Length: 199
Ligand SMILES: Cc1cc2nc3c(=O)[nH]c(=O)nc-3n(C[C@H](O)[C@H](O)[C@H](O)COP(=O)(O)O)c2cc1C
Image (cartoon, rainbow, N blue to C red; front, side, top):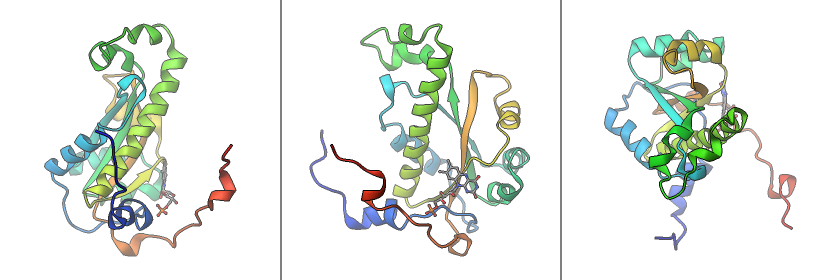
């Protein structure tokens, strides 16, 4: 079914116009049901050849958050520790192994066999897209996000993906109910004319 009507202005406000990147969190939990609901929306977003290279580790326990915070930049440690959950958006550089069932109508795996650089490029592109879908899904469900790339990727890979070296971290994102006191003034968003061309 294709979309026929724009979503409501209230939804656009919630997902885009009024949504912010939060640095602090209210003391209000996020349930496993909510986490699964985020995933179930996110997974419907498109990826090349339906490849789904994103691999998601949801750090919810104090232990897991501490392990992740230990890998985070100094200014991000508290943002990991105090959030109800912080997800590692990882990416599987061997995502092509799953293509026989994820994209069954052609032999898409053969497009990527033996092509390490091409796979890494595709994993980065499509897992980043999935990370973006994840944030928009979380916002659609009434949650807030705080994305972060300030961490030591080698440390995260060692701490969380040691048994699966084909999986590496892309970015991390705290999720919960944002503390309005924790945000900076909104930074400028360029007008259409600045970075767009219609040919
Ligand atoms: C991929 C990515 C990485 C980011 N890394 C960090 C980070 O390491 N630390 C941090 O405090 N904010 C980080 N941010 C937050 C951005 O600075 C923020 O999203 C941007 O300034 C827009 O803020 P706004 O959504 O409140 O308008 C990151 C955002 C993204 C999308």
